[in-house]
Amino acid sequence: MSKVLVFGHQNPDTDAITSAISYAYLQKKLGVDAEAVALGTPNEETAFALNYFNVEAPRVIETAKNEVDSVMLVDHNEVQQSVSDIKELEVLAVVDHHRIANFETANPLYYRGEPVGCTNTIILKLYKEHGIEIPKNIAGLMLSAIVSDSLLFKSPTCTEEDVKAAKELADIADVDVNVYGLDMLKAGTNLADKTALQLIDADAKSFPMGGKNLRIGQVNTVDVNDVLSRQAELEAEMAKQNELNGFDMFVLVVTNILESDSVVLVVGEPKEKVETAFGVKLENNTAVLSGVVSRKKQVVPPLTNAFN
Amino acid sequence: MSKVLVFGHQNPDTDAITSAISYAYLQKKLGVDAEAVALGTPNEETAFALNYFNVEAPRVIETAKNEVDSVMLVDHNEVQQSVSDIKELEVLAVVDHHRIANFETANPLYYRGEPVGCTNTIILKLYKEHGIEIPKNIAGLMLSAIVSDSLLFKSPTCTEEDVKAAKELADIADVDVNVYGLDMLKAGTNLADKTALQLIDADAKSFPMGGKNLRIGQVNTVDVNDVLSRQAELEAEMAKQNELNGFDMFVLVVTNILESDSVVLVVGEPKEKVETAFGVKLENNTAVLSGVVSRKKQVVPPLTNAFN
Image: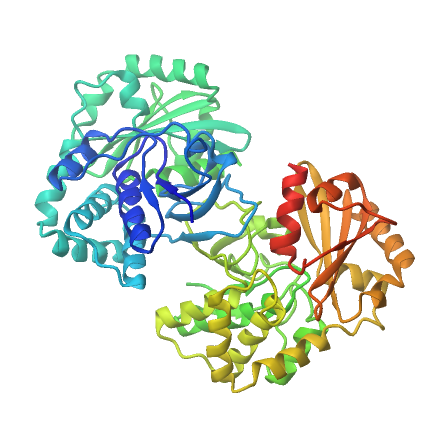
């Protein structure tokens, strides 16, 4: 089999970067000429994890067809979240924990989707099914992804399988998950030196819903006011991005990782769909979303229902 | 968890019927209140297998939302091949060996797709992963599906995993796979008392391709002339079905299961796409497709490429 690139979604988070590394390593052990790459540079949280476990960041690609004919996707499946020339490539495999949408192949493929909190929880199973040992540093990165996606097991997306997987991986990586995990999460909340565009777009993904094109970003923080004090500047940047990219609406979810609540900031129309989705009234374009920390489980599904 | 229905595609073949039975049995063993149902009655091949292993045919449903909120799909994922009200239902799980297309969920789900020859080859793995024993009669049905989908291991869709799975299942079911398999396949080629509609539509599936709506049927036979002697009658029925259902083209693949060749019969436009797809010239609306026995691997992909 010729060379295969393995990558996570655009605007990569810790799971997107590390699941490419862990899945590519597994594929190499299974005899595939696989290389982990990324569709963007690591955020500060991911950089902390890579540095801690002494692993280099995957190189960043803009297109893949110039290098390979076939790819494997981790932590995403939707076309608009993938590499720009995905439609020209054969997708051989997907390992993911998101909804399936805007994804189509001409041929049968390997698709492993499970409704767990983190792609690396599934990848741990695949290592076991194939009887492949996980190196210490890769186990550390896989653990980092579970901590990141589950906000240290507080997110409603977190399942018993994720908790169990994290324990196993922490043993292999030889770290205290609570100490290491909080240090890593805090490394990702250093927002002061970020531009408005970096804040709104760092983790943003596009979601077509009911004929509208939504952009949904999420920022983790230990103090929501750190972000909201820049509301005017953020709104201007969100409006600009809507116009530049044809988004109908930009939804920014600002999540307090210590208190497990979020504030939503909305620019674009129709705003009443957001109010319907969450059962809230927007005031000054914002609303508190009590107990909401997961875009995937608590933001995208109610918005999808409201728009459809 | 409330009750869940498990079913394969419309116009069910042996894999569609038996994978619903085998997967529902596995789910029941895992504590899910699952019932295998079907989107049509068994064909003669499947009826032979059910009768041989003394298992009742699953009851046929037209809609599912009137009974349940959630379903599990086997041997298909595309909306137009599924139950009529699939868009109103939550898909909890899919086990399939086809391309993924026209499939979208609002929530993460369990999706197990593998590029093997038969859904039941994947389901055998799932039994093993969960450590669940397979009853003799269910093993016999799973074996029947592998024989059916692989035309006794002759189809290019057949992988080493399918052959290995069939051996394991034949041991559990206590049958000689070659003797039983050929008897079962022959039971499915009794075409004389079938109407033209039954012949063209028994195994037909719809495939949207490049803005066109294709209907692709397949008939297995031990003598292609048995079918082609009725060409005028078949063409009239294909034209009628195109008009009634808005198909742009009806493609009927008549497969000789002993010689592993097919003849294609085409009604509708643009026919030149079919010629491009297979590198043939249609004469009198037909062409020989040498070595073609698999709709999934040898018919749908070249047509998809030609139409896109």
